[in-house]
Image (cartoon, rainbow, N blue to C red; front, side, top):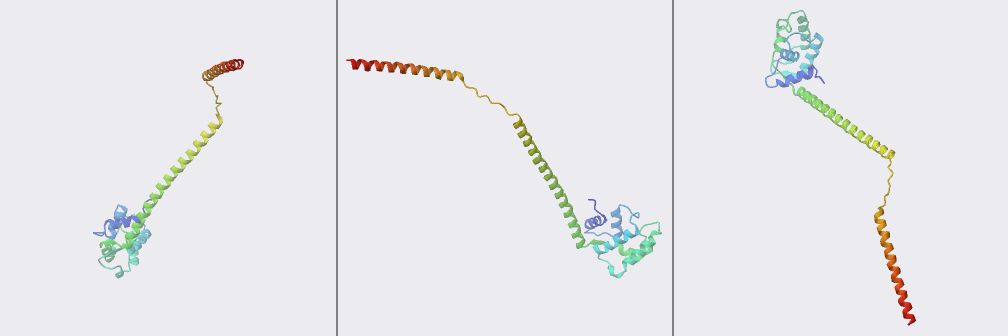
Length: 198
């Protein structure tokens, strides 16, 4: 956001808070030139704002009907080759050449403006970071959906393979045990029949 002339004028006023600044120097510094930049109406509006936000140690604003005199001063300046000519109204010109200081209310407004700018930057950064977080979350959801679909579509047939060598070995051992058991049973029957016959 580009600061307008009033914000810039408050910034200039704060920069000159120790030594003060004349109205003319403020206008010249504001525009970066001593050439006429303001239209007559714009300068009248700026001058009214200046009266509300700047004050000087010298003569008071109340001694002069500043708005009317300033309008006349600017009207006479319109026909002049130079901007803000002293000869058109010596008293007003001398008053505006006094050193002015930004009032506390103007400094407070400028501080509020700086805080607003800072909070806008912070809000923009927070919005950017939240957009990134939302994007990452959406990306993660999409990736998990894609992997879920892929895993459903590519079901694999799992073949259960028996270890036949182990099975064969167990069957062989089982057969041997049956044989030995059969032999033991036959021997037991032979002994029982011998003992009955005796």
